Length: 352
Image (tube, rainbow, N blue to C red; front, side):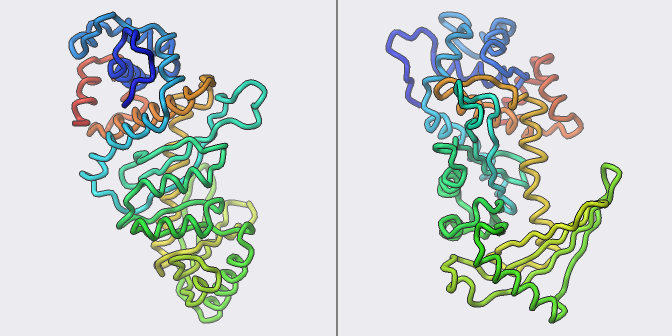
C-alpha cells in the first residue's frame, strides 16, 4: 500500500492501520476512540510495534483515513480475506447488497449519503469484498465487486436493482450461478416469468412450503420453479434457464409474491433455502454493523474517511467471526477483546 503522506510523516502507516484495526476490534467507532485505545494499550502495542514516535494523535488517524486511497485499502482487505476464502472453500450463497453510511454525508447532502456495497458469504458469514458505490450508483458498485471475485461453486443473489444483463453476464463469466429478483424494472422479463409460472401451476408442478414462527407471528413461504427454454435468447439475458416464484404470507399481512431469474432449475426447497440465506447480509452483516459498531451513527464525512473506516469495520467483524469461540456473541467478543489483552492477541493469531 502506498503511503499518501509527505516524506516528513513521523508515524509508520502500517502501525497506524494496525492500531486502528485493533481499536475497532475493541469497539472503537471514531478516530478519537482509536487514539484513546492506543494510549490506553501502549504497553501492549509496544510488544508488537516499534512506535518510534509514540501513539499517533486522533488528528493523525483522521488525516490518514481521509487521504488514503480507498481502492488501495480495499486491496489489502481482499488479500487479508483471500486466505480465509481459500481455506473455507467458499461455496453457496454470495449475497450482494448496498448499505448507506447514513451520517457520512457532506454538508448539505444529507439526502445522498455514500453507499458501501458488499459481497457477503452466507457460509462463512464474512464480507468478501467491499467498494464505495461510484456516484452512489449501487448497481455499478455491485458489478465491480463481481468482477473481483472467483464464483465457481457460488450462487450470487441480489435484489431487483441488480437484475440486468451486465450483471448476469459478469456472474456467468466468473463461473457462478445467480438467483436474481425481478420486478417491474424489467417488465418484459417479469411478464414472461409470470406466464411460465402460470403454465407450471396448470401442469401441477411440484412446490415446497416452509413455516417459521417468530416475533409472535407465523410466516409461510411457498416456492415453485419453472424451466424456460427461450427466454435467455429472447431477452438476451445470459445464463437464464429457469424462473421461480415465492409466495409469502406473514401473520395478517397481505400475501406477497416475488419472482426470480435462475441459471439452474433448482428444486423449490433449494430455492427457498437460497433466498432465505440471501437475507443474512441484512440480518447478520448490516444489522451487526449498526447495532455493535454504530455505523449508522458514525459522522466521519470528509474525503475518503467514510469508505476507509467502513472497510475497517468489516475487516474487524471478519476477524471476530473467524475466532473459534462459538459460545460468545459477537458483541461479547469485542468487549472481551477490549478487556482481555490475551484474548485480543489470540483473535489476531487466529488470522494467520
